[in-house]
Amino acid sequence: MTGLTDNQTVALTIFLTITAVGMLTLIAVYLMVGMAWQDYDTQSDSAKARSIASRPSAAVLFYRAITRKCPNCGRGKILKSYFQMNSQCSSCGSVFWKNEGEWTGPMLIDFIFALAASLYTWAALVYFDFSLTAQMILTGLIAALGGVLVMPWSRSLWTMFLFVTGEMGAATIKPE
Figure 1: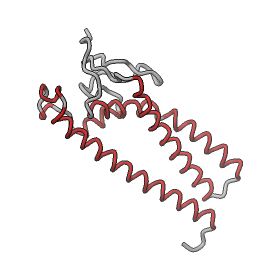
Figure 2 (figure 1 turned 180 degrees about the horizontal axis):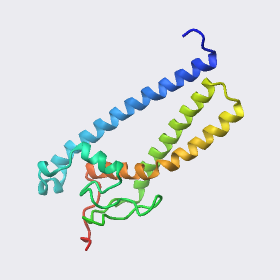
Figure 3 (figure 1 turned 90 degrees about the vertical axis):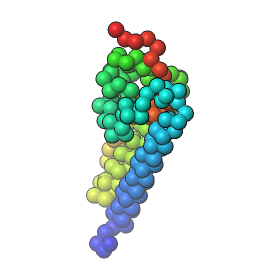
């Protein structure tokens, strides 16, 4: 690439590397969910009670995760507020997280998103030759905002993953 400065070349390399790693990660997540869903049919006790035909497809599950709905029924809300989860579905009674340590998965998703957003921002700022002060301030703000903005969806995606792997709790009490 002629005409690019060394900083612009580094910025483009970082941008393309993050994009490639992100795409590979998405493929890996897709395969993990697919394998877990396949194992769910053969290992889960509740799979025997539920026919494969009534099981939601991967597209439906991802839609429910993006809209922050219960992965089991698609009606109840996963979140009480932006920062607080419901303990169970208001519609079907499924328990979303039954173990204390299940917050680490969404926290990792938040961290990875914040890191990627800040690196993309930094690469763009380097490419367009912003000052070092602007690079530090803007990448820090983007990292903080990115981690906070993705929180509801990281919890929802993790709940979907728990559902697919059979780790989401069964209904304790049917809501009225």
